[in-house]
Amino acid sequence: MSTEDKWKANMEKVAFTQRFPGLLLDWQSCEGKTVRSVVPLTGKPGAAVVVFTDATYTIAPPLAPEPWALGQALVDARAQLEPSHPAAYAEYDRLVKKDKDALKSARMEKILGAIHNNAEQIPELKDRLKELVKEWK
Image 1 (cartoon, rainbow, N blue to C red):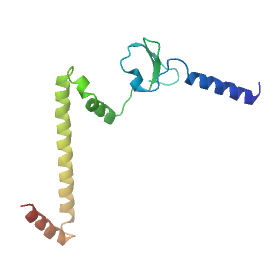
Image 2: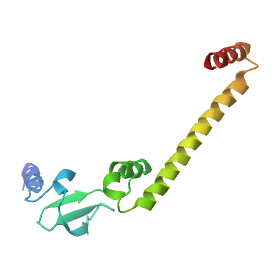
Image 3: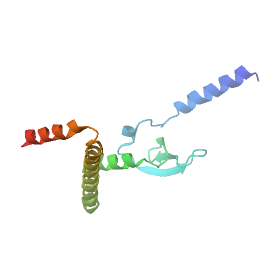
Image 4: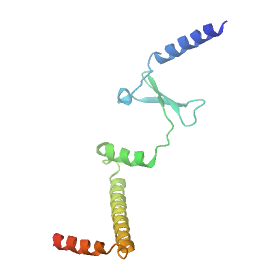
């Protein structure tokens, strides 16, 4: 078999796998389906073939979401999850507030540090700060 024939045979196989019956390529198509099995995908650690009871299937990426994605998932799915996990959401809300407060405090300390570190080298800075304070009153 020539190299070209091998390439054509491979492309034909790839095209067929992409249109194999039951393949679902978006998460919306999986909504409401019941999972029959989750089979590890050989050669891709953490990934799996999710087979549904109606013989449809999809490929799921490795379950190693980044921290931001985990938090966003809790926000996006709150309406569906909170009724079953109210205490967990109360704790999540507490931690979100604590994190926001810490970030706010860190920003304030950074600003105050910059003012303190530059006050002697830039005398106009003190005058400008005094003007700003007067404007805010």
